[in-house]
Figure 1 (cartoon, helix red, strand yellow):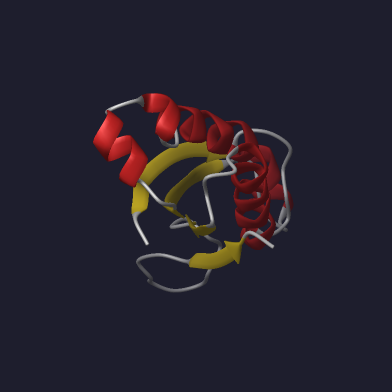
Figure 2: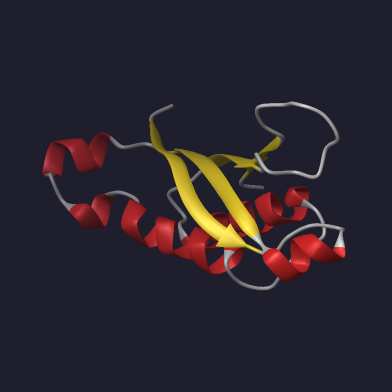
Length: 120
């Protein structure tokens, strides 16, 4: 199946279980892969035949920069559900939420979750 990928989306949010995460906030980075049949869009060169990734970006931004969640799993779930609801062409979506400033004692590069959801 064809796919559209958005990688390294950078948003500032207030997600986390600790009070300081909710007060100070931090950067969250998202990777979104949407699986869809893109043949009609490729043949017609018509935006209406595909998924407008600028709109998907704004959807993700509104969620990450909006109401705080305790878990990045919930952030990923909200993004996946919103995209599946808004775009009937998306048959499957993978959302990865990176939290590189997670409150982990010790040295690490990244903390992230990935979820995959399909249209029922």
